[in-house]
Image 1: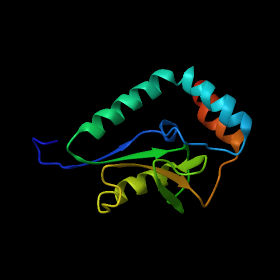
Image 2: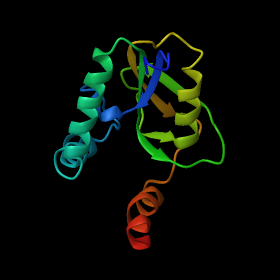
Image 3: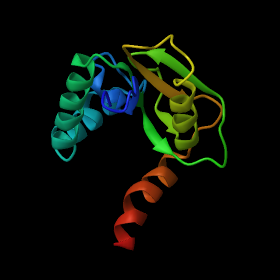
Image 4: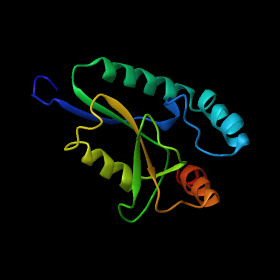
Length: 141
């Protein structure tokens, strides 16, 4: 990036890297499901994300780390919320993630910070979300 004089870096990580992140009011989700996923099937992914964040934070670039929650599809950008470290919510529309990343190119409030992004306008049905993101994708392979 230095070779091409690109000082600004905006990357995607995960809300679960913030130790204070609690995606739900559900005890079962926060204390069983989320930790189980992070330590079993997602372990290497989250280890890689932690290393990536550490490398970016140690750089001299003008970086922003964006930490979305569980991603889902919408037809267009909706209302979303940004918060330092992680936002309090379970879902982020992919369109909102993209819009929030683009917004960081002209917004310097979060330079050298990690931020969370959540969608506030709509929420997916949890059963449909599991079906679409997990089961349906496996069947296509």
